[in-house]
Image (cartoon, rainbow, N blue to C red; front, side):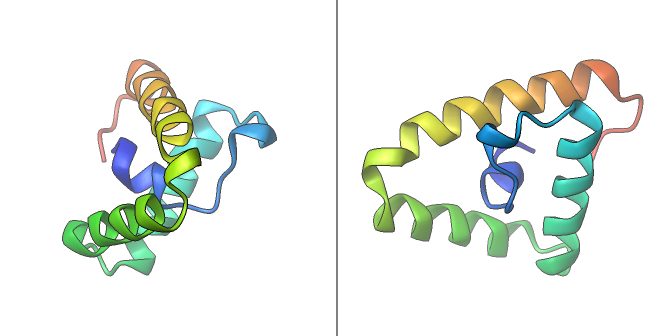
Length: 76
């Protein structure tokens, strides 16, 4: 879930709620046609394009995914 959120357009600076993060995850999965491999390839591309920002964004995505999991009865 964190990898899909990482690949979404949602930004940490938006200070999103868990509900907004879940929506961003769902939207990103739809854009990938449910293909997790496509989303993971996007993460790899972003990591290569912006290595200086990768660790910070991934930490945020992991933290946000944990928040989504703890507040949502439905797992993506």
